[in-house]
Image 1: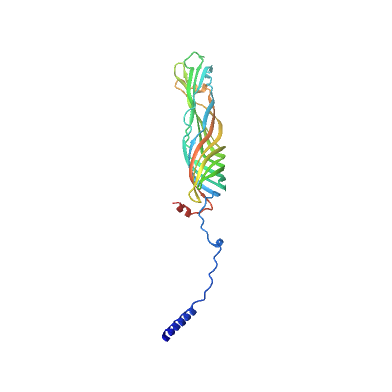
Image 2: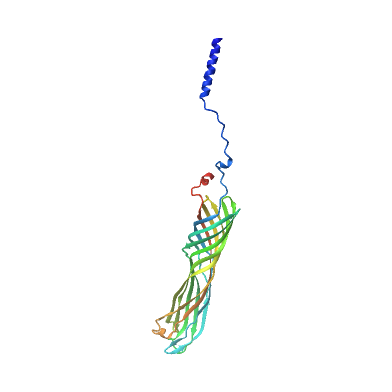
Length: 333
């Protein structure tokens, strides 16, 4: 019994000594307030506000109209050895304006702007400039000329008839155009913005009008007295103001990068001009000096065109202030 009690006392003293060597117990620290903890909120809807720049490929189709009017040419009175061989009649027949004014043209566009988002609506302003190699084809009308002359000296050496065909052509080209527009859009989906746009357009319109053809003067015997040759071209290069309207959509690939597709109609209004060509005379085989007695003729014409086109653009834009290598792009896939 004494041995058992001694063993219990020894164990108790050993436990007490071990407990004395343990560190003192302290109270657990209070938890940190929730406001001081880091948060990992899920990304929200994209923000469309801010500055952006971009580039696009542009496809353009001509939508203008051309007209030709007031074409005039008066056959001259001719003389032989000082005698006046007067014109007794003349016919001018103006053919319909034909030919293709323009087709598809491709180019490149640079654009930039600024957006402000209010709830689901986006308001902004944008400017752009487009350069393209316009391959518009000329349209032309023909003037068929005919006339009769009096027999003054009762000789086959005099001019009896005159006949010819004159072509009046017109070509307009728009090599570059730009615009300053307002935009209003609506966020149709978290990453999709649909918008309408409209504003002022500016462009450089190159215009060319040409007159080409011949009028032949023939004597009573059928011999060539002389020929009036017409070949001239008038050109102008003007900066034109107009208007443009359209619609499109932007799709956010990331907070910084956006795909763009849009359509616009642009109109620079009517452009009126004139063409004039003075003939050069070439003596025919029937008379060596017919041109000396043949006054020079002049062709005049008035032209009018409406310069307009449809354009579709597809491109990409970068918004400043967004993520450059965003994790949200990879999180989607």
